[in-house]
Image (cartoon, rainbow, N blue to C red):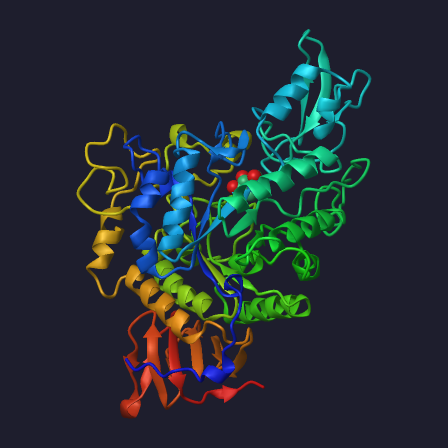
Length: 562
Ligand code: NOJ
């Protein structure tokens, strides 16, 4: 393998968040340090060398705060403390320092749309009674109907069922309703209230002072609500829903940006922004708002060359006017793992996907998953890797009902199997009952059972195999850092035939993915840097890129698509 160097003239020093490879840690399922069957901060601290050697730049931690865990920690009871399941605040501080010492930045998850019903503010609101100032921090509203027995409006929770729950007051009388766009244990905060704004600004300072490099903002499009909380109605315009993307939300991010800019070291925000149009999405990325946001259009895109080219183009076009870096995401803790999606007949995904259990050819899914990994690593901007992506893990589709903890399962009466199938504890080694997730002789089994066969996908097994998915990720991340960091955030499409996604980056770097039904020729003169699977020999010493394979190469001159 020969690696040609990129001319330094085309590289510029860019802020880390413009090009970082960020590894997502779902703490409960990453590594268990104390043997109780739940992942924890001790487990992460023990695996920092693994993350350093993987070659990522930053770690994003799903919520680690004090929480009753009604929604995997997205129901926060105290934003300034760590849940005892995970460890202590002192340990989190140590972890941040140790990650930095390994050259890894740290992003924490901020959950500002709602808190837990066990948060002191909600408990105070319950205790203070009707009409109290304490209730104004939330959305308490009288019901409709003669006796207020109907919800105040027709909004539906993202988890299914009405977005309102009626209170029973301390004296037993039926009270007002409160809004929760997710589970009833997650009351929405009222962002029109100055104390809510002040509280979250203080929380930002709290973590910034502890050295975090950034925040992932949960439901970033949802904080502001349309005044008067009007009905959605029978035929809503998806671009104009009263509970998302309301104009006031941008003002919140402008104030947060002023705060993060006041700290040294390029602290950054990444927004979880699910919106129907790229134009709406891009407004969150204006220069005085969020630094970046997850690109879910790419995640949802089917495994199809035209569709992928289109979504890449739309992404680049949407980010260009606001000068924000695009991001590329294949999977996360809310979605069906891409190995499973790509092995299905229909490879697309949408958030309401209830197709868990649909047949999937995992050999095919894994081959495509490897190709997709190299594609995302080659694109300009930032890239997110969800824990287990680097092992080629598939969704666990047959978890027994009684072990499922995701509230979407219960709220949908089981019609939605929920998201636990992508949250199964990682396999680190063969041999032990927990596949190395917990220490030997742990007191409890992993909180979700690992499927048969995962010992072959463990870190230990893959470290011993130069052709493993783990080896591919390590090589891809290393080469990406060496070849692509600091390049202009552009690409040039090159044509090599139907069903092929191929482009060049500055400095003679090429990426080609073959999604057509037949092998395609590697452009002549191309020097292979890395490929997601073995190439085949063609006529007269040429090389062929097999179906569902991605190759990175230098030189070679595919026809420019202009
Ligand atoms: C998005 C998070 O990623 C998801 O896990 C959570 O359930 C909802 N927001 C509510 O906080």
